[in-house]
Length: 212
Image (cartoon, rainbow, N blue to C red; front, side):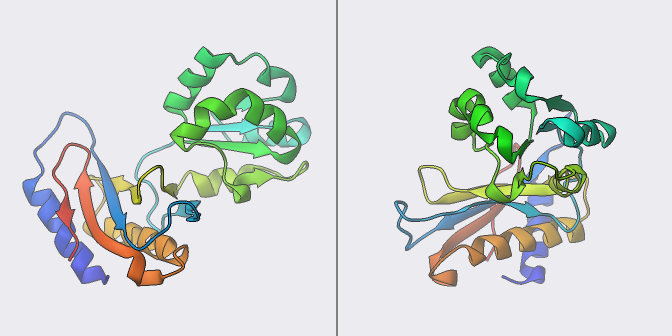
């Protein structure tokens, strides 16, 4: 998949997209083929070269100095070990609905997973291994990286549906992001391009346009 092909598809997406009273997201959808869903391990955060095009809600689960650093760095919510138990299912659902990324200090991963896992897991919002921080790690770097990242994952079907940006971004920016997602997905597939099926670009409310 080359950049010109992606740019051509983005142009078609814009031509057929109706104006909405909200900023639409632009998504990249990849149908996988020749993969074994039982053994396929495809889940990761991918940094977008042109950013997300809009701010994200970040929650940091940490104690000690890292929790203070997270607050100074602008985390939307910082949850300490003592505060984890104060989240019942309703509060976790409310938080999950508005939060894109949860950054967790490794020593707090077990209580975090016990309280949040049942709700975040099915939503694909549990932290990926590289987003779990050491006990004294300053979370600022992870916060900065994830604020411009997207998620690649499969659920129960061989489909990867990833956020690539917003309609207000330029065609070049969207193309750069989509190519980065494509590269990240490809790197996770044992059979490489042989496991890539059809690929589409679409806006939130628009019809998908195949990238050929």
